[in-house]
Amino acid sequence: MNRRSFIVILLVIILGIQTFPFSDAEYVPSNITVKPEVRMGHVMVFDPHNDVAVIFGGLSVEGGMHFLGDTWVYSYTENSWTELELTSSPPSDDNTAMVYCNETNEIIFYGGDSNPETWSFACETQTWSRVTTSVNPGFRDSHAMVYDSQENVVILFGGFGGDGQITDDLWMFNCSSRQWTELFPLTRPLARYGHVMVYDQSINKTVMTGGNTNSEGYQDDTWIYTTSTNDWTELTPIGTPDALKWSSMTYDSVNQKCTMFGGVNGEDHAVNYTWVYDGSLNTWSRCYPTTAPAGRINAGLTFDLNNNVVILFGGMVDYENHFDDTWTYSYESNIWIDMEENSDTTPNNFGFDPMPIALASVIGAAVIAITLIIRKKT
Image 1 (cartoon, rainbow, N blue to C red):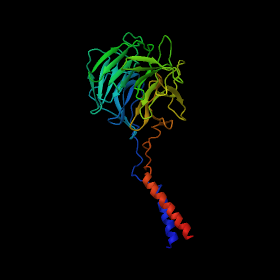
Image 2: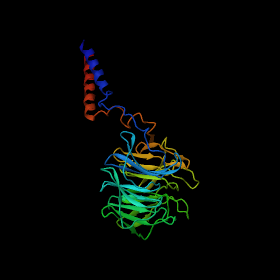
Image 3: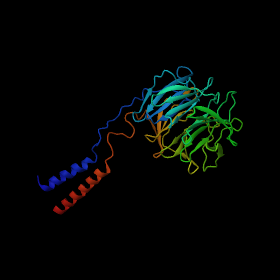
């Protein structure tokens, strides 16, 4: 073999390295065929301790309308659902609320149609336990809750009260003292139900929008609440979302955006709009992904901060049409992915890792050097 032939073969081998897998990662089969039954009004949060999304309860029409009291976890990296077999859990119900509290590594749950209770889900042991408090917000349905990480407290606002009327009351659960306290801010939003709230870490405030006030209909207002000063402030953002109730919203802590999906408008039409609120800029923007989940209300929505994706499960169009599908949304790419249709592989893991920068640099230098040698010889 002459020198020129040897150099050409070496060049081909080096170039071929760029397309060769540098990882033994395989296509990961999905267990997505095992999943929660169709439902709406369930609650869903992300548990960073176990790297899973957790859902509880809801209302199902599968085999006849009934409340649910099951607990499931979804792993994005494995694209699989697992039901937890638990000895105790909150009562079966829908339109309740729960939030993850990072300082105590637990999920706090509150709500109920007949016997409202406070429950804690210990993420380390994945067990439910009832929290005994001296007072509580009482009967509550279609309310909203957030966890204020600055103050280590849970904030609850609105919903249907014990007399069946919608409320504008505000409550705080202290994760340290394990007690509820009613708050009395001077200014507050209109009483409502079916609204959404998240805690926005970029501005260290609770953001609330939407819901139905009955007296003044569906709302598209935006309010912020500051726990330390016990103060509500109505904002005048650039852009406003549609006036909706029973949307779903979560906080994207990686991109520092509030992501809202779905809901029903004043014409009783379930929409599939994706809205993003930027707290630092006080702007609402509607996104237009090429594909999206079907329009729905009361879906579960949470943000997986370990994998930088929003996760959605279930919801309904009406009392005869519920969903049991799982979707993910990426803010950077503005893409919704149906995880059941894409269940052949683990997302973003297609059998190889990106080439390390240092290795790419060495290969590039070698290619240039060999090219120069060939030209010199010729």
